[in-house]
Image (cartoon, rainbow, N blue to C red; front, side):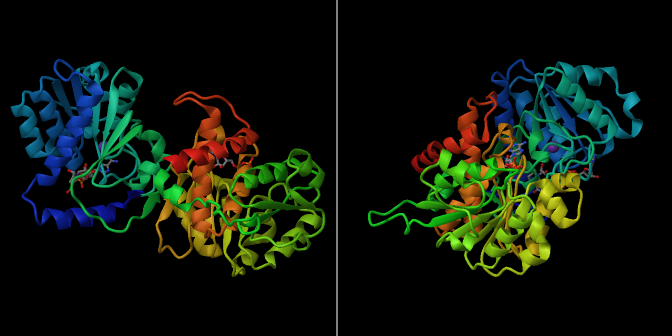
Length: 494
Ligand SMILES: NC(=O)C1=CN([C@@H]2O[C@H](COP(=O)(O)OP(=O)(O)OC[C@H]3O[C@@H](n4cnc5c(N)ncnc54)[C@H](O)[C@@H]3O)[C@@H](O)[C@H]2O)[C@@H](O)CC1
Ligand SMILES: Nc1ncnc2c1ncn2[C@@H]1O[C@H](COP(=O)(O)OP(=O)(O)O)[C@@H](O)[C@H]1O
Ligand SMILES: [K+]
């Protein structure tokens, strides 16, 4: 499990530890880890050119100490002080003692006064260390810092962010104005939520944790790794039969959207349930693709027993849609609500449910349920997913470039999905996810676990389908569904 903690929690843990350690010990640990990561990025330290962007706080202190260590190993290190009078004194002395060069580009002087020598040092560096702000940062980069970050980004240097890319909000991943775009980030003690959630996450690059000994306790955010997901995935026992494995029902589709239920069924068939029932008007399309589906065209409750229902994909908003929705809302089995079902049901009827309920909105659907703007939801996903879960009294999986899962009540950490690819932003991918998550619900997993395992497999399947590291190729939602068994095997086999 990868865990992240909010700034307040990190600071409290640091204070507890610092009380037991000599002054400067934590910063020394942080700087050592940072210098090691910088050396790996540089490959050859001796003779390399390193430029430090240094703000007024301890983040700048870490950076100056790491710069001093690199200078001692033969790098040519220059530090650009953005608040010259307030730079970390110990770090500055260490850098000077190691032969580093100190330059100034005061924020107060403004963008037009940045000395040419500073711009040249940034542009010509092999590596720029972003020590502008860390967890003490508020808001986006100020103009001088923004300009230097841009110079580095547009030039040749690799950019290594110290603790977090300056300008992103550590607690939420919100980016309010300009922020550093790093090739790599070295974070200290624990992950910060903003490193794992977009839009902040996009700025992070390769992420590495340097332990410094803090014990921050229960996390605010967590990301399941292979082993965590493997422990959740149901495996049929020797005595299993299709009913004991769980049966999932899909109430979806309309004459206008006959394809969505096919995709939901495709995901469901690969999600661990022993059988999939389909209730709705697209029975022919479903059996044409999946003859193994048990189909019916009446109301869901007349289709036979299931251990979980999925309602919504392609349901539309006609009378049949409303009747199907009313019918499944009246059942007491676990229910996954997606797409049209979310807007048709509305907040009050969702809140009124007492059986386990999982909602899978994308940002637009979440915004409608919250009465907010889509852009606000995307800028502050963590707040949005928590607020939705609390207000609707249901587990919420918020889709998008970062997928988050929250239970109501705020007692358990929000989950962030660690897999995926932007190729997944393709029509119908959400339908596959709802079938997959519904199937896992039917096997008996609670909503939070079913949602987490489904999101993980779905993202992994998309990566397998799209192929290749940084590249990849366009995929269809159906490709994602077909890649689920391979993703499942990857997870189970570690
Ligand atoms: N506290 C500790 O025990 C440790 C802290 N460490 C480092 O210390 C950092 C936190 O240090 P600080 O609390 O000094 O805070 P920061 O260094 O993150 O920044 C604080 C300073 O930046 C200014 N500032 C805030 N927002 C700004 C903005 N948008 N543009 C420009 N300046 C801005 C503030 O006025 C303040 O003076 C961590 O991120 C980490 O790098 C590490 O050394 C490990 C141990
Ligand atoms: N930029 C992105 N990067 C990664 N995954 C994404 C991105 N955009 C969307 N996704 C994922 O793709 C899927 C799209 O689902 P959804 O929006 O419901 O589409 P549809 O309604 O067409 O099925 C979700 O799993 C979502 O998390
Ligand atoms: K930083």
